Amino acid sequence: MAGDGTKRQGGVSFERIAALRAREADVYRRARPKTAARTDNGIAGFFDGVPMHWMRDWPTPFPILVDNARGATITDVDGNRLDDFCLGDTGSMFGHSPPSVARAIRRQAGRGLTYMLPSEDALAVGHLLPQVFGLPFWQIATTATDANRFALRVARAVTGRETILVFNGCYHGAVDETMVRIVDGKAANRPGLAGEFRDLTRATKVVEFNDIPALEAALAAHDVACVIAEPVMTNSCMVLPEPGFHDALRRLTRAAGTLLLIDETHTVSTGLGGYTRAHGLEPDLFVLGKPVAGGVPASVWGMTEAVAQRLRGYNSHKQSGYSGMGTTLSANPLQFAAMRATLEEVMTSANYALMETLAARLLDGLSAAISAARLPWHAVRVGARVEFICASGPLRNGTEAEAAHAPALEAAVHVALVNRGCLIAPFHNMMLVSPATTRQQVDRLVKAFGSVTQELSP
Image (cartoon, rainbow, N blue to C red; front, side):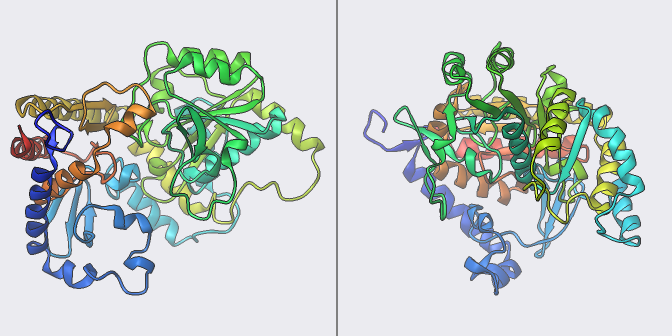
Protein backbone atom coordinates (compact mmCIF):
# COMPACT_ATOMS: atom_id res chain seq x y z
CA MET A 1 0.00 0.00 0.00
CA ALA A 2 1.52 3.31 -1.07
CA GLY A 3 1.27 6.53 0.90
CA ASP A 4 -1.48 7.69 -1.46
CA GLY A 5 -3.56 4.60 -0.64
CA THR A 6 -2.83 2.86 -3.96
CA LYS A 7 -2.21 -0.88 -3.70
CA ARG A 8 1.13 -1.80 -5.23
CA GLN A 9 3.36 -4.78 -5.88
CA GLY A 10 7.05 -4.22 -6.46
CA GLY A 11 6.45 -0.50 -6.49
CA VAL A 12 3.87 -0.73 -9.31
CA SER A 13 0.14 -0.20 -8.87
CA PHE A 14 -2.06 -3.24 -9.37
CA GLU A 15 -4.09 -1.19 -11.84
CA ARG A 16 -1.05 -0.67 -14.05
CA ILE A 17 -0.02 -4.33 -13.67
CA ALA A 18 -3.48 -5.52 -14.74
CA ALA A 19 -3.54 -3.18 -17.71
CA LEU A 20 -0.13 -4.37 -18.91
CA ARG A 21 -1.06 -8.02 -18.54
CA ALA A 22 -4.37 -7.64 -20.39
CA ARG A 23 -2.72 -5.75 -23.23
CA GLU A 24 0.12 -8.25 -23.55
CA ALA A 25 -2.24 -11.24 -23.34
CA ASP A 26 -4.10 -9.87 -26.36
CA VAL A 27 -0.85 -9.47 -28.30
CA TYR A 28 0.16 -13.00 -27.36
CA ARG A 29 -3.13 -14.49 -28.57
CA ARG A 30 -3.10 -12.66 -31.90
CA ALA A 31 0.45 -13.91 -32.60
CA ARG A 32 -0.48 -17.58 -32.03
CA PRO A 33 -3.67 -18.62 -33.84
CA LYS A 34 -2.47 -22.19 -34.48
CA THR A 35 -1.38 -22.65 -30.90
CA ALA A 36 -4.64 -21.23 -29.61
CA ALA A 37 -6.64 -23.63 -31.76
CA ARG A 38 -4.72 -26.59 -30.34
CA THR A 39 -4.15 -25.68 -26.69
CA ASP A 40 -6.45 -22.84 -25.61
CA ASN A 41 -9.07 -25.30 -24.35
CA GLY A 42 -6.48 -27.72 -23.05
CA ILE A 43 -4.69 -30.61 -24.74
CA ALA A 44 -7.06 -33.52 -25.17
CA GLY A 45 -6.38 -36.60 -23.08
CA PHE A 46 -4.41 -34.88 -20.33
CA PHE A 47 -5.80 -34.00 -16.92
CA ASP A 48 -6.30 -30.25 -16.71
CA GLY A 49 -5.25 -30.08 -20.36
CA VAL A 50 -1.50 -30.43 -19.82
CA PRO A 51 0.95 -33.37 -19.58
CA MET A 52 2.45 -32.00 -16.33
CA HIS A 53 0.56 -29.75 -13.95
CA TRP A 54 3.28 -27.08 -13.82
CA MET A 55 2.73 -26.35 -17.52
CA ARG A 56 -0.37 -24.49 -16.33
CA ASP A 57 1.82 -22.32 -14.12
CA TRP A 58 3.22 -20.41 -17.11
CA PRO A 59 1.59 -16.96 -17.05
CA THR A 60 0.89 -16.94 -20.80
CA PRO A 61 -2.82 -17.23 -21.74
CA PHE A 62 -2.12 -20.74 -23.02
CA PRO A 63 1.11 -22.74 -23.31
CA ILE A 64 3.63 -22.13 -26.05
CA LEU A 65 3.45 -25.12 -28.40
CA VAL A 66 7.02 -25.75 -29.48
CA ASP A 67 7.87 -26.83 -33.01
CA ASN A 68 11.62 -27.04 -32.48
CA ALA A 69 14.45 -25.78 -30.32
CA ARG A 70 18.05 -25.35 -31.42
CA GLY A 71 20.90 -23.78 -29.52
CA ALA A 72 19.35 -20.93 -27.55
CA THR A 73 16.27 -20.41 -29.75
CA ILE A 74 12.76 -21.88 -29.59
CA THR A 75 10.34 -21.72 -32.52
CA ASP A 76 6.65 -22.34 -31.89
CA VAL A 77 4.12 -23.87 -34.29
CA ASP A 78 3.05 -20.38 -35.40
CA GLY A 79 6.61 -19.58 -36.48
CA ASN A 80 7.40 -17.20 -33.61
CA ARG A 81 11.10 -17.34 -32.70
CA LEU A 82 12.09 -16.78 -29.09
CA ASP A 83 15.52 -16.17 -27.61
CA ASP A 84 15.43 -18.87 -24.93
CA PHE A 85 16.80 -17.86 -21.54
CA CYS A 86 14.67 -20.44 -19.70
CA LEU A 87 16.47 -23.41 -21.27
CA GLY A 88 14.20 -25.98 -19.70
CA ASP A 89 14.67 -24.45 -16.24
CA THR A 90 18.33 -25.56 -16.35
CA GLY A 91 17.70 -28.93 -18.05
CA SER A 92 19.14 -27.48 -21.28
CA MET A 93 21.60 -25.14 -19.60
CA PHE A 94 24.19 -25.77 -22.33
CA GLY A 95 21.70 -25.16 -25.14
CA HIS A 96 19.16 -27.34 -26.89
CA SER A 97 20.60 -30.55 -28.35
CA PRO A 98 24.33 -29.78 -28.19
CA PRO A 99 25.79 -31.39 -31.34
CA SER A 100 28.04 -33.82 -29.45
CA VAL A 101 25.12 -34.97 -27.27
CA ALA A 102 22.84 -35.37 -30.30
CA ARG A 103 25.49 -37.52 -32.00
CA ALA A 104 25.87 -39.66 -28.89
CA ILE A 105 22.10 -40.19 -28.70
CA ARG A 106 21.90 -41.22 -32.35
CA ARG A 107 24.84 -43.60 -31.94
CA GLN A 108 23.40 -45.25 -28.83
CA ALA A 109 19.89 -45.51 -30.30
CA GLY A 110 21.18 -48.16 -32.67
CA ARG A 111 22.76 -50.14 -29.83
CA GLY A 112 19.85 -50.37 -27.42
CA LEU A 113 18.33 -47.91 -24.98
CA THR A 114 18.26 -49.85 -21.71
CA TYR A 115 19.47 -53.24 -20.50
CA MET A 116 20.41 -52.92 -16.80
CA LEU A 117 24.10 -53.45 -17.59
CA PRO A 118 27.01 -51.01 -17.98
CA SER A 119 28.38 -49.88 -21.33
CA GLU A 120 31.73 -48.57 -22.56
CA ASP A 121 30.43 -45.06 -21.91
CA ALA A 122 29.81 -46.02 -18.28
CA LEU A 123 33.53 -46.76 -17.91
CA ALA A 124 34.38 -43.29 -19.20
CA VAL A 125 31.79 -41.55 -17.01
CA GLY A 126 33.16 -43.37 -13.96
CA HIS A 127 36.46 -41.55 -14.53
CA LEU A 128 34.92 -38.22 -15.54
CA LEU A 129 32.69 -37.65 -12.52
CA PRO A 130 35.53 -37.58 -9.95
CA GLN A 131 37.62 -35.43 -12.29
CA VAL A 132 34.90 -32.80 -12.75
CA PHE A 133 33.21 -32.79 -9.34
CA GLY A 134 35.90 -34.04 -6.95
CA LEU A 135 34.20 -36.75 -4.91
CA PRO A 136 35.56 -40.27 -5.55
CA PHE A 137 32.43 -42.45 -5.61
CA TRP A 138 29.21 -42.02 -7.58
CA GLN A 139 25.81 -43.50 -8.35
CA ILE A 140 23.36 -42.71 -11.14
CA ALA A 141 19.68 -41.80 -10.89
CA THR A 142 17.17 -40.34 -13.32
CA THR A 143 16.16 -37.14 -11.51
CA ALA A 144 17.76 -34.98 -8.85
CA THR A 145 14.73 -35.72 -6.68
CA ASP A 146 15.64 -39.41 -6.70
CA ALA A 147 19.33 -38.66 -6.19
CA ASN A 148 18.52 -36.55 -3.14
CA ARG A 149 16.24 -39.25 -1.75
CA PHE A 150 18.90 -41.91 -2.14
CA ALA A 151 21.66 -39.75 -0.67
CA LEU A 152 19.49 -38.96 2.35
CA ARG A 153 18.88 -42.69 2.84
CA VAL A 154 22.62 -43.22 2.94
CA ALA A 155 23.06 -40.39 5.43
CA ARG A 156 20.46 -41.88 7.74
CA ALA A 157 21.89 -45.37 7.36
CA VAL A 158 25.48 -44.50 8.19
CA THR A 159 24.72 -42.04 11.01
CA GLY A 160 21.92 -44.04 12.63
CA ARG A 161 19.96 -40.79 12.88
CA GLU A 162 16.53 -40.00 11.45
CA THR A 163 16.34 -36.21 11.34
CA ILE A 164 17.47 -33.99 8.48
CA LEU A 165 17.82 -30.21 8.38
CA VAL A 166 16.82 -27.91 5.53
CA PHE A 167 16.81 -24.16 4.97
CA ASN A 168 13.57 -22.20 4.81
CA GLY A 169 12.59 -21.64 1.18
CA CYS A 170 14.86 -24.40 -0.14
CA TYR A 171 14.27 -26.44 -3.28
CA HIS A 172 15.31 -30.07 -3.62
CA GLY A 173 12.80 -31.35 -6.14
CA ALA A 174 9.92 -33.43 -4.80
CA VAL A 175 11.74 -34.85 -1.77
CA ASP A 176 8.98 -35.12 0.83
CA GLU A 177 11.08 -34.33 3.90
CA THR A 178 12.18 -30.99 2.43
CA MET A 179 8.63 -29.73 1.96
CA VAL A 180 8.63 -27.72 5.19
CA ARG A 181 8.85 -24.03 6.00
CA ILE A 182 8.92 -21.66 8.96
CA VAL A 183 5.54 -20.24 10.02
CA ASP A 184 5.41 -17.89 13.00
CA GLY A 185 8.85 -19.08 14.06
CA LYS A 186 7.98 -22.79 13.95
CA ALA A 187 8.44 -25.57 11.41
CA ALA A 188 5.32 -26.54 9.44
CA ASN A 189 4.37 -28.47 6.34
CA ARG A 190 4.36 -26.27 3.24
CA PRO A 191 0.85 -25.27 2.17
CA GLY A 192 -0.61 -26.86 -0.93
CA LEU A 193 0.97 -30.31 -0.63
CA ALA A 194 -1.30 -32.77 -2.43
CA GLY A 195 -2.28 -35.83 -0.45
CA GLU A 196 0.32 -35.36 2.29
CA PHE A 197 -0.95 -37.11 5.41
CA ARG A 198 2.16 -36.86 7.59
CA ASP A 199 3.62 -34.17 9.76
CA LEU A 200 6.88 -33.76 7.87
CA THR A 201 8.38 -31.72 10.69
CA ARG A 202 8.61 -34.80 12.90
CA ALA A 203 11.89 -35.75 11.24
CA THR A 204 12.90 -32.45 9.63
CA LYS A 205 14.29 -29.30 11.19
CA VAL A 206 14.17 -26.02 9.29
CA VAL A 207 16.19 -22.85 9.88
CA GLU A 208 16.82 -19.70 7.88
CA PHE A 209 19.62 -19.56 5.34
CA ASN A 210 22.58 -17.44 6.52
CA ASP A 211 21.46 -17.72 10.18
CA ILE A 212 24.52 -19.30 11.79
CA PRO A 213 23.28 -19.11 15.44
CA ALA A 214 20.01 -20.85 14.46
CA LEU A 215 21.95 -23.52 12.60
CA GLU A 216 24.21 -24.09 15.57
CA ALA A 217 21.24 -24.40 17.92
CA ALA A 218 19.46 -26.85 15.60
CA LEU A 219 22.54 -29.10 15.45
CA ALA A 220 23.34 -28.93 19.16
CA ALA A 221 21.38 -32.08 20.08
CA HIS A 222 23.57 -34.17 17.74
CA ASP A 223 20.46 -35.83 16.28
CA VAL A 224 20.62 -34.56 12.69
CA ALA A 225 21.76 -37.10 10.11
CA CYS A 226 22.25 -34.64 7.27
CA VAL A 227 21.95 -31.00 6.30
CA ILE A 228 20.77 -30.76 2.69
CA ALA A 229 21.51 -27.39 1.14
CA GLU A 230 21.71 -25.50 -2.09
CA PRO A 231 24.90 -23.42 -1.90
CA VAL A 232 22.81 -20.51 -3.19
CA MET A 233 19.05 -20.51 -2.67
CA THR A 234 17.59 -20.49 -6.16
CA ASN A 235 14.00 -21.63 -6.39
CA SER A 236 12.88 -18.65 -4.39
CA CYS A 237 13.94 -15.14 -5.21
CA MET A 238 17.69 -15.78 -5.24
CA VAL A 239 19.52 -15.59 -1.91
CA LEU A 240 23.33 -15.55 -1.90
CA PRO A 241 25.35 -16.90 1.02
CA GLU A 242 26.82 -14.24 3.25
CA PRO A 243 30.59 -14.23 3.86
CA GLY A 244 31.55 -17.02 6.26
CA PHE A 245 28.26 -18.88 6.02
CA HIS A 246 29.56 -21.93 4.17
CA ASP A 247 32.63 -22.14 6.40
CA ALA A 248 30.36 -22.14 9.45
CA LEU A 249 28.01 -24.68 7.87
CA ARG A 250 30.87 -27.12 7.30
CA ARG A 251 32.43 -26.52 10.72
CA LEU A 252 29.14 -26.93 12.61
CA THR A 253 28.03 -30.07 10.75
CA ARG A 254 31.36 -31.75 11.39
CA ALA A 255 31.25 -30.84 15.07
CA ALA A 256 27.76 -32.35 15.35
CA GLY A 257 28.61 -35.57 13.47
CA THR A 258 26.17 -34.48 10.76
CA LEU A 259 26.74 -35.12 7.07
CA LEU A 260 26.52 -32.24 4.58
CA LEU A 261 24.76 -32.75 1.25
CA ILE A 262 25.23 -30.03 -1.36
CA ASP A 263 22.56 -30.02 -4.09
CA GLU A 264 24.03 -28.33 -7.18
CA THR A 265 21.12 -28.95 -9.54
CA HIS A 266 20.67 -25.21 -10.15
CA THR A 267 24.01 -23.79 -9.00
CA VAL A 268 26.04 -25.88 -11.45
CA SER A 269 25.64 -22.65 -13.46
CA THR A 270 28.50 -21.27 -11.31
CA GLY A 271 31.32 -22.93 -13.21
CA LEU A 272 33.00 -26.23 -14.00
CA GLY A 273 32.39 -28.48 -11.00
CA GLY A 274 29.61 -26.23 -9.76
CA TYR A 275 29.63 -23.82 -6.84
CA THR A 276 31.34 -26.53 -4.79
CA ARG A 277 34.49 -26.54 -6.90
CA ALA A 278 34.48 -22.79 -7.56
CA HIS A 279 34.29 -21.95 -3.84
CA GLY A 280 36.15 -24.89 -2.33
CA LEU A 281 33.22 -26.43 -0.46
CA GLU A 282 33.74 -29.85 1.12
CA PRO A 283 30.44 -31.77 1.11
CA ASP A 284 30.10 -35.35 2.26
CA LEU A 285 27.42 -35.96 -0.37
CA PHE A 286 26.85 -34.18 -3.68
CA VAL A 287 23.82 -34.17 -6.01
CA LEU A 288 23.47 -32.90 -9.55
CA GLY A 289 20.58 -33.42 -11.95
CA LYS A 290 19.03 -31.57 -14.90
CA PRO A 291 21.88 -30.59 -17.31
CA VAL A 292 24.39 -33.35 -16.53
CA ALA A 293 23.34 -35.35 -19.62
CA GLY A 294 22.63 -32.43 -21.93
CA GLY A 295 18.84 -32.72 -21.62
CA VAL A 296 18.46 -36.50 -21.38
CA PRO A 297 16.86 -37.27 -17.98
CA ALA A 298 19.73 -38.20 -15.67
CA SER A 299 21.25 -37.29 -12.32
CA VAL A 300 24.28 -38.23 -10.26
CA TRP A 301 25.04 -38.41 -6.57
CA GLY A 302 28.48 -38.77 -5.09
CA MET A 303 30.10 -39.42 -1.74
CA THR A 304 33.47 -39.04 -0.05
CA GLU A 305 35.78 -41.93 0.78
CA ALA A 306 34.78 -41.62 4.44
CA VAL A 307 31.07 -41.94 3.68
CA ALA A 308 31.76 -44.81 1.29
CA GLN A 309 33.64 -46.71 4.00
CA ARG A 310 30.78 -46.22 6.45
CA LEU A 311 28.27 -47.35 3.82
CA ARG A 312 30.27 -50.50 3.10
CA GLY A 313 30.27 -51.27 6.80
CA TYR A 314 26.54 -50.68 7.03
CA ASN A 315 25.84 -52.88 4.01
CA SER A 316 27.94 -55.71 5.40
CA HIS A 317 25.63 -56.01 8.40
CA LYS A 318 22.20 -54.99 7.13
CA GLN A 319 19.49 -57.49 6.37
CA SER A 320 19.27 -58.66 2.79
CA GLY A 321 16.52 -57.22 0.62
CA TYR A 322 15.72 -54.16 -1.47
CA SER A 323 17.56 -51.06 -0.27
CA GLY A 324 14.89 -48.60 -1.38
CA MET A 325 17.44 -46.94 -3.68
CA GLY A 326 17.50 -47.20 -7.44
CA THR A 327 15.00 -47.42 -10.31
CA THR A 328 14.95 -49.78 -13.28
CA LEU A 329 15.66 -47.20 -15.98
CA SER A 330 18.47 -45.44 -14.08
CA ALA A 331 22.06 -45.92 -15.28
CA ASN A 332 20.87 -46.88 -18.75
CA PRO A 333 23.25 -46.67 -21.72
CA LEU A 334 21.45 -43.70 -23.25
CA GLN A 335 22.12 -41.70 -20.09
CA PHE A 336 25.77 -42.70 -20.11
CA ALA A 337 26.23 -41.84 -23.79
CA ALA A 338 24.70 -38.38 -23.31
CA MET A 339 26.49 -37.82 -20.00
CA ARG A 340 29.87 -38.71 -21.45
CA ALA A 341 29.39 -36.30 -24.34
CA THR A 342 28.27 -33.56 -21.94
CA LEU A 343 31.17 -34.00 -19.51
CA GLU A 344 33.82 -34.37 -22.22
CA GLU A 345 32.71 -31.83 -24.81
CA VAL A 346 30.00 -29.52 -23.45
CA MET A 347 30.60 -28.90 -19.74
CA THR A 348 34.00 -27.29 -20.36
CA SER A 349 35.98 -24.42 -18.87
CA ALA A 350 35.85 -22.59 -22.19
CA ASN A 351 32.06 -22.78 -22.36
CA TYR A 352 31.72 -21.64 -18.76
CA ALA A 353 34.00 -18.67 -19.45
CA LEU A 354 31.76 -17.60 -22.34
CA MET A 355 28.62 -18.05 -20.24
CA GLU A 356 30.15 -16.05 -17.38
CA THR A 357 31.01 -13.13 -19.66
CA LEU A 358 27.58 -12.95 -21.25
CA ALA A 359 25.76 -13.40 -17.91
CA ALA A 360 27.75 -10.50 -16.46
CA ARG A 361 26.69 -8.39 -19.44
CA LEU A 362 23.08 -9.41 -18.85
CA LEU A 363 23.26 -8.53 -15.15
CA ASP A 364 24.70 -5.10 -15.93
CA GLY A 365 22.01 -4.44 -18.53
CA LEU A 366 19.13 -5.47 -16.27
CA SER A 367 20.52 -3.42 -13.38
CA ALA A 368 20.86 -0.35 -15.59
CA ALA A 369 17.28 -0.74 -16.84
CA ILE A 370 15.97 -1.04 -13.28
CA SER A 371 17.85 2.08 -12.28
CA ALA A 372 16.65 4.02 -15.32
CA ALA A 373 13.04 3.08 -14.57
CA ARG A 374 13.46 4.09 -10.91
CA LEU A 375 11.94 0.82 -9.72
CA PRO A 376 12.70 -0.60 -6.25
CA TRP A 377 14.04 -3.85 -7.76
CA HIS A 378 17.45 -5.48 -8.05
CA ALA A 379 19.21 -8.12 -10.15
CA VAL A 380 21.49 -10.90 -8.93
CA ARG A 381 23.66 -13.57 -10.51
CA VAL A 382 25.38 -16.88 -9.76
CA GLY A 383 27.54 -17.80 -12.74
CA ALA A 384 25.38 -18.16 -15.83
CA ARG A 385 22.15 -17.81 -13.83
CA VAL A 386 20.66 -14.31 -13.54
CA GLU A 387 17.45 -13.14 -11.87
CA PHE A 388 15.66 -9.84 -11.48
CA ILE A 389 13.74 -9.47 -8.23
CA CYS A 390 10.86 -7.05 -7.84
CA ALA A 391 12.08 -5.82 -4.45
CA SER A 392 15.15 -4.16 -3.05
CA GLY A 393 18.05 -6.37 -2.04
CA PRO A 394 20.17 -8.24 -1.41
CA LEU A 395 17.91 -10.81 0.23
CA ARG A 396 19.20 -12.68 3.26
CA ASN A 397 16.93 -15.69 3.76
CA GLY A 398 13.85 -17.60 2.67
CA THR A 399 11.40 -15.40 4.54
CA GLU A 400 12.72 -12.30 2.80
CA ALA A 401 12.68 -14.15 -0.52
CA GLU A 402 9.05 -15.13 -0.08
CA ALA A 403 8.10 -11.56 0.77
CA ALA A 404 9.93 -10.31 -2.33
CA HIS A 405 7.95 -12.58 -4.67
CA ALA A 406 5.53 -10.48 -6.75
CA PRO A 407 3.44 -13.00 -8.70
CA ALA A 408 1.05 -10.64 -10.49
CA LEU A 409 3.81 -8.26 -11.52
CA GLU A 410 6.19 -11.03 -12.55
CA ALA A 411 3.49 -12.69 -14.66
CA ALA A 412 2.81 -9.47 -16.54
CA VAL A 413 6.51 -8.90 -17.19
CA HIS A 414 6.96 -12.48 -18.35
CA VAL A 415 4.23 -12.28 -21.04
CA ALA A 416 5.49 -8.87 -22.13
CA LEU A 417 8.98 -10.30 -22.64
CA VAL A 418 7.60 -13.24 -24.65
CA ASN A 419 5.84 -10.75 -26.93
CA ARG A 420 9.19 -9.03 -27.43
CA GLY A 421 10.87 -12.30 -28.43
CA CYS A 422 12.44 -13.33 -25.11
CA LEU A 423 11.54 -16.39 -23.03
CA ILE A 424 12.57 -16.51 -19.37
CA ALA A 425 11.65 -19.07 -16.73
CA PRO A 426 8.10 -18.64 -15.43
CA PHE A 427 9.30 -19.17 -11.87
CA HIS A 428 11.20 -16.42 -10.06
CA ASN A 429 12.33 -14.57 -13.19
CA MET A 430 15.29 -16.86 -13.80
CA MET A 431 17.42 -16.40 -16.93
CA LEU A 432 20.23 -18.67 -18.09
CA VAL A 433 22.99 -17.95 -20.55
CA SER A 434 24.25 -20.96 -22.53
CA PRO A 435 27.28 -21.52 -24.76
CA ALA A 436 24.88 -21.17 -27.69
CA THR A 437 23.59 -17.78 -26.49
CA THR A 438 24.88 -14.82 -28.47
CA ARG A 439 25.72 -11.31 -27.39
CA GLN A 440 22.94 -10.10 -29.69
CA GLN A 441 20.42 -12.25 -27.81
CA VAL A 442 21.56 -10.83 -24.48
CA ASP A 443 21.26 -7.31 -25.82
CA ARG A 444 17.77 -8.02 -27.17
CA LEU A 445 16.69 -9.26 -23.75
CA VAL A 446 18.12 -6.17 -22.06
CA LYS A 447 16.34 -3.94 -24.58
CA ALA A 448 13.05 -5.80 -24.12
CA PHE A 449 13.36 -5.65 -20.34
CA GLY A 450 14.14 -1.93 -20.52
CA SER A 451 11.03 -1.36 -22.63
CA VAL A 452 8.82 -3.19 -20.13
CA THR A 453 10.31 -1.50 -17.07
CA GLN A 454 9.83 1.92 -18.65
CA GLU A 455 6.15 1.11 -19.08
CA LEU A 456 5.98 0.27 -15.38
CA SER A 457 8.12 3.17 -14.22
CA PRO A 458 6.56 5.44 -11.61
